[in-house]
Image 1 (cartoon, rainbow, N blue to C red):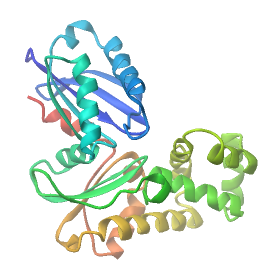
Image 2: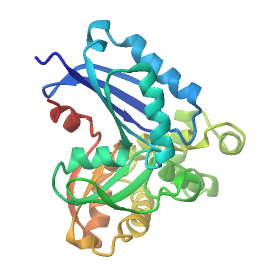
Image 3: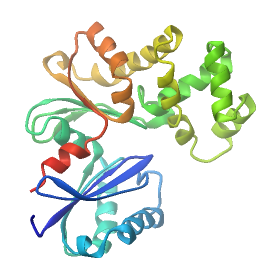
Amino acid sequence: MSYNSTLIIDAGSTKTEWVVASAGSALFRFVTAGINPNYLDDEAVAANISEFAAACPAELAARISAVDYYGSGCAAAANVARMENLLRRRFPAARLFVASDLLGACRALCNDTQGIVAILGTGAAACLYDGSDIVSRAPSLGYMLGDEGSGTHLGKMFITEYLLGTLPADVKNDFEAEFSIDAAAIIRKVYREPAPNRFMASLPPFIAKYVDNPVIFNFCKSCFDSFIQKQIFYFSDYQKYTLNIIGSVGFHFQNVIRECASENKIIMGVVNASPMPALIAQTK
């Protein structure tokens, strides 16, 4: 076992996974709340880092010689600089690498081969990867203006159908019972409470239970058709590449996505729930 270890951080808007790894094996795993520097101040991000540091055994923490951080919001150079600064405070001697969660997905799904890579989790993003770096990225407008096909988008469309009264009766009744919710509570969560995107993004596991219902299947299909139209059609030569997807939504709704892809003559590649297993396997 190598003395030196790499801390791999996969930071999404909903959760952050921390893994200390060496020679292709995970030595320690920990999960904290999500980190997105677009929405969190430095104090909140630092609290997340401190939570991991407090949980990690001291003997493993002393072996961390490199930190690879892949995070939401880190396509922007200013956010990369912020995260580098905050991580440097905790890991002053380590080699730091901070990049977008999308580049992490590319490395996990494609390694050194080219392809279109997408994230479908709480948010949504897509890019063209040349086997080394991202060469083109579709605009990602966030949950208020975009994120088609994401967990937030699915949740937003689902509660719209609920409020319009178009859900099947059994789905509606089960939804109200499981979430102890009604129309007034939904309006309050969306318009008055903080982080409405997190509420919306919490709904896909429930939606997935009913995906075989024709009404729900077609509703989901319309969401992923929008993802393909807005994110994948952005690349004029998209049919030359495989479409590779990472994220819990992409993984659990992959049958719907594969149907949408087939109808648009898109070749599907790898679909995984998380980039972490592949990133761990690549450690030395």
